[in-house]
Structures are given as structure tokens and as C-alpha cells.
Length: 109
Image 1 (cartoon, rainbow, N blue to C red):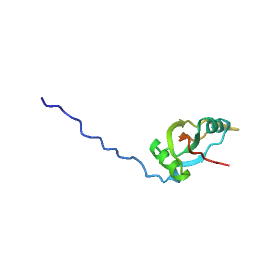
Image 2 (cartoon, rainbow, N blue to C red):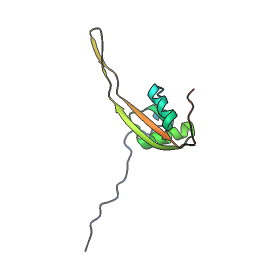
Image 3 (cartoon, rainbow, N blue to C red):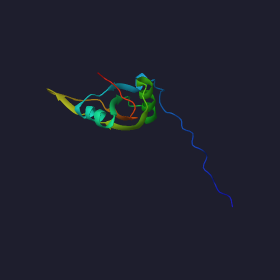
Image 4 (cartoon, one colour):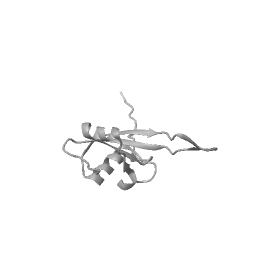
């Protein structure tokens, strides 16, 4: 009996190759992110819209010399805003919550 196999999938990255400093734009320091970092050793960053989870993991490990355990990503929609009679819209952005190994910490202050 002959079984038909699918050809192996070749992962081709679409878009530009990003450097670590282009992937992680800035850390987000809010009450909620401070709670996450103290309680769960998870840190929050604003990241490039084109970055994938593996890109974010590599960038955080390179920039902060830590070991990343998990990466969660949220695509945040920009809000519609108004100034007097002009309607506008804030830009869309991507937020990453990065969980670290218990041995590692990041100091932002």
C-alpha cells in the first residue's frame, strides 16, 4: 500500500529581518505590569508590529541577558480620538508579556 506524504513545509519569513533593538521598542511600566513583574516574574514590552513570538524571545534574551520561558502577545487596536472638529485615530500597536526563568530579573529603575 502506498501512503502519500505531504512535502515538508519550509518556513519562509515574510518581511524584513529585525535587529533586537528594533523588535523591543520600550518597556511598559504601569501598575499592572509592575504587579506582574513582582508576582509572576513577567515583564511587559511594546514591540514591533512585524515581530513574532520567537523574534521577541530572542530580542529580550539578547538585550537583557535573561532566559525567557514564555511569550504572550496582544495586538492592540488604536483608539478613535477627536481634537475640536478634527477626527483622528491613534496607531495600532503590539504588546508582549514575557515570562522569565525564576533565576532571572530585569531592573528598569
